[in-house]
Image (cartoon, rainbow, N blue to C red):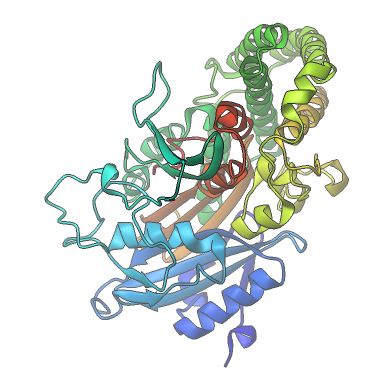
Length: 516
């Protein structure tokens, strides 16, 4: 049997399957199936390991799971294999998995043989006893500075290192530029200086789900609604229930408010980086207006407590809806004015156009998602291709731009702002009647559930694997930043080092969402 002959387990977004229906296949079958699906247009949405329970270990010590998204078919294809302490790397043939393979090696001490640049993703200790895949002693604190950095040598070539400690409140991250004069030849990004162990804390028994819900709200604070919604969909899939229609609609409103706040803030950040103060000042205030609308909805500006497995924690009574719609009318006018001014100014466009270009081929090869992918002309949006309940949009509504530069990433945000403004008003005006929460029964034992949500940065993936007692044995989170940091590095090649702040802001990726 070849990889192309394997019977794939296919689910839709928010699907759940018994692990018995997803048995491990030989590595060669797994690899052929994954590579074949990617060649046919699939994306690697998630790829992770979980220890094989006794009595199978230690010869077969790790189950590897892959979630492949076929956007054209609206399918999620699941694959599973079982490996020992070494397994063949697929990164040279499928660059989308290179970071996942390094993460698996870091977490479980297994070696991806043949990986073109096998080194730690972060600086935390292995999840199992003994040395990690690089032979580092788990009893010695790990130092991310030990990373084997890439270096360019030659006349007039120099290296510029920034971070990990930055001024102000920005999170720690290390950026190492290889430059010839002012031109960047290569940028290497090292993160993971504040590892919190969120994925590990999500495992085990959590009877009422409170601990898990509070944890996922902190995965990336600016994406509270996005991650909480993905988690809720996973828990609902394991329980075999769906949130009420009214709750699904309110989740949609909260998610679009989160998108509005962050997109407006990012355009304001772009304005700051090119010295265009009118939009910079306006967007800073307007972002706060959207956060205040979210607080009107649930009492918290970042949406904490709003989304819960089984539904939502707060309803929108008629008086609340009236206040929100009235405030949104004024914010809508201010938002459009500030953004129109920004993109209508020739000196602004001169700084944005042609800066930080990323080609569609590179974006596809690296598996980029969200704004970064759509700005390269890739029509990818979970709301259109893998819509959870209450989140569907038409494929023709996906905001894309073809040029892959800073201007394109800004324009995608502008179009999504316009779309989100309309969606919030329309959804609130037509809010379905009914309850806002459904009690969840016990989670299915020995099962795997997967959920995708289009957060404001891009696709969020949550996967849960339960044990024989129905407790969470493995919880995997893929923030869009995990895919997209590599895109930022590629966008800097051939650019002036002085343009890094602007290009970096046009991606605006998460440090903490990467470090789970």
